[in-house]
Image (cartoon, rainbow, N blue to C red; front, side, top):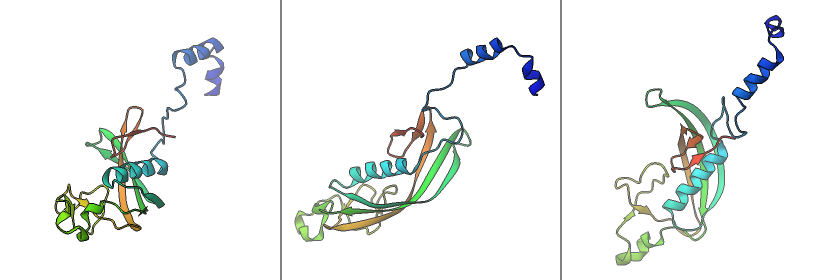
Length: 162
């Protein structure tokens, strides 16, 4: 093969470089996938939306990752499985506490299952009380869909590969 390359004039090779310029630095052709930092960003976005109080991400551990096809092979997906612990120093949804009695908000749930990706059961739009100083551990997975220019997280944000 190298013998054939010697026959190609240098100008022809330069013409190929001009016609097919290199992609910008952020472009990635093979092996570009969301990383743990993207999953942490999704987690932060979802916690902020669901629990309207200050919180602290205590720990985040990726347990595994997986490629998958979405829409019968028409779109690539990537999944990050993780275990994260979030602390709520002031608590969250304090108006959902049982101690609120008759002043307890109507959109509160007593369900002890906490999830960021699965709605609370049995009514999906209800809020959950977290006591001041409480911690919740989320063992979940976030799916990312490959889009032009990046990967879209379940929070609707487009994340760019590194």
